[in-house]
Image 1 (cartoon, rainbow, N blue to C red):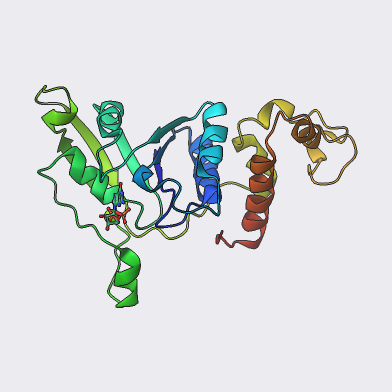
Image 2 (image 1 turned 135 degrees about the vertical axis):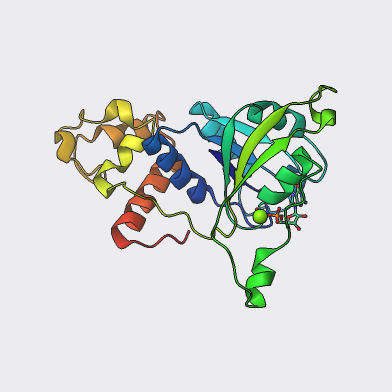
Length: 230
Ligand SMILES: Nc1nc2c(ncn2[C@@H]2O[C@H](COP(=O)(O)OP(=O)(O)O)[C@@H](O)[C@H]2O)c(=O)[nH]1
Ligand SMILES: [Mg+2]
């Protein structure tokens, strides 16, 4: 499961990635975070993108910083995808289709700003397409016949969680897991206000970052309210 994000255009939304990570954990899929448009790093100074990328890296998730535009990191990305079946997920406009097109230049998936299309009121598809691609020889060190299967998913504006109840969310935040059941109130602790909460203790001790704890709190609210806007 390739979680495609961007430092800008569209704006970086760490919560979107944290929801996708929880869903991947729940489904038993291997998530890889791909920060495309890395050529735009630093252009949006309202949020420290690299800080979040390193938080995920420290949790043990693979994070790649790449650019479909400049080609930075694309060869390493090709190597990761080779002989695997992967799904590209992420907001509209992060460059999912552009990435498929640079991996295999015989692919000509439609790219462009979907929000402009919405603006014109045209129909959007929710179908995924499975692309069996031949990786460009420029990305494989000249070796021909390297292939990958990539599902491109158009039209995602929100990433809703499926099959995850609010009280189970902590199970899918991998760094929370070791502390579960260790609170004074055991499994009935809500990890929000109770005395003797091991999760909040871990946040204080720096074993869980404030960013991920905050994300977990907000996603809990999203599950309860069934709203998915960040
Ligand atoms: N600056 C920059 N723009 C990119 C990059 N990758 C894609 N784009 C542009 O971002 C826009 C959306 O790309 P698209 O592939 O349609 O995104 P998708 O909706 O995720 O499939 C297009 O105008 C692309 O040319 C990149 O690495 N850097
Ligand atoms: Mg697309």
